[in-house]
Length: 169
Ligand SMILES: Nc1ncnc2c1ncn2[C@@H]1O[C@H](COP(=O)(O)OP(=O)(O)OP(=O)(O)O)[C@@H](O)[C@H]1O
Ligand SMILES: [Mg+2]
Image 1 (cartoon, rainbow, N blue to C red):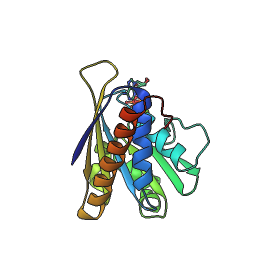
Image 2 (image 1 turned 120 degrees about the vertical axis):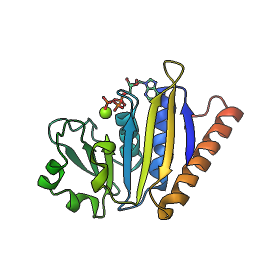
Image 3 (image 1 turned 30 degrees about the vertical axis):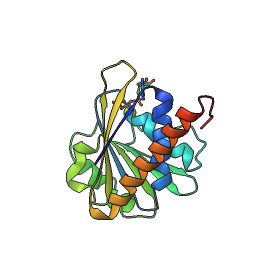
Image 4 (image 1 turned 30 degrees about the horizontal axis):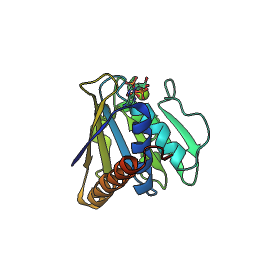
């Protein structure tokens, strides 16, 4: 488990890119946490890093939006589903057990159907208005190394930022 604090939206975007760099086909990214914490911001930055130029918005009416980048990306927002049954109705297995990367906002609401090979990211509002606290966990031992890599990439970014304040990352 790792804990990372971002101090502004742009930093969250950078963190999203660090996360995207460790993702492979079939990976599942679960996003939970406070309202307005930054789940969609992270989703957008992951999409950007995997080469999706389309404008990413939360799939409010459809549960899932599908995108084509270097790999396929399925972006779920399950905030409005009233029963996990609705996930069966849309045939969630076709998405979760595929070659795509899946991102699920509000994953806690459908936790029982989420495969173990997930990277679980909980985002909380921080002490300062623009601070966000990220807790990132691996669902099983196969993705543990990926979580460690996210920490390493983040440390690299932080070190670079310290040594060169003008860096464009
Ligand atoms: N450090 C930060 N990281 C991310 N977003 C931040 C940060 N500081 C401020 N913000 C603001 O917080 C908001 C995050 O919105 P976003 O839609 O990503 O959250 P969300 O968790 O998806 O919300 P919802 O619960 O409605 O799905 C944006 O308005 C953004 O500008
Ligand atoms: Mg959102």
